[in-house]
Length: 388
Image 1: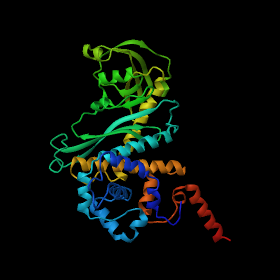
Image 2: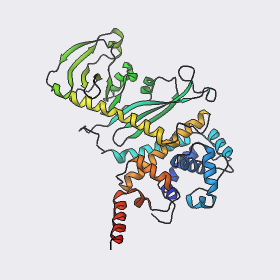
Image 3: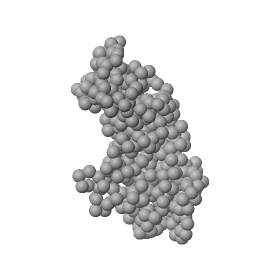
Image 4: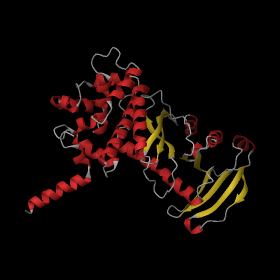
């Protein structure tokens, strides 16, 4: 890339503006817009996410301070806080959600061959979970949560090959996690890792009928009958039992009439016994335990998103503004993941965002900035020059 361009401008070149405008036209986002169009709105919010601005005011103040550089940054104009806030309240959030879905379809295939730690299978592997963001019920009356508090939930289906989100849904805090299973279309042959909150036998049976696999934690109250027991495993690995079962409860048996598998595993590190429920009879019992261990990647993803993308401090109070904010954050993550792949950078996405956040006004080429080999080569050249 041109070394004379700002890092932020180089990053904007990665984003397909044509696809973004298709999303805008789909919802007539620029209808009767005079001052701030959807693209410029997205670019300014993208800047705020990348540089970890805490509010719309922070974004506007920073861009105003560098107004002589805005054209070269790829930003057409700076606006005040109220203009940006009104745009977030009124512009249809589905514009940004659709663009996020486009980025997901673009980025996920790039990481399809990424390895999963301690797992040697070819199936797609997904982790399903949600993270809750607590809010003030007075300011966010549309988002009730538990215990008279406000909250939103970000339900995420994470592809463990590359830690790329494959599905995202934003709801209020009272939406039960298991309801999300009705929104997901199971992929044949894929493995879905879930915790106890997602035990909905009707939905799990529908997943089974779609030739998909699930691995979840079994509830302590599970009523079942043992059909067959497998003793062919090494207890030193932590395995305690591997059984084929039938659900015994009348309602449970009606909702899930098929055979299930129950695997008991003792985790030495945490000194806890885990019981897994699955419809997968192809993988070994140890692989089932190892698969579930990788479910914690989604917890790491949520923690990373909250710490490194501006998502805890929302930039608006309406449902539209909150949805828009979250999707811009996801678009930022996916754009960096896309760039990481094409630069073949050995740095993590976390490290890349940290670097980009403090280098937005730098003019270093992205490849030189984000490729460790290039960095090491520059250090070596300076060292050789110093010792010449």
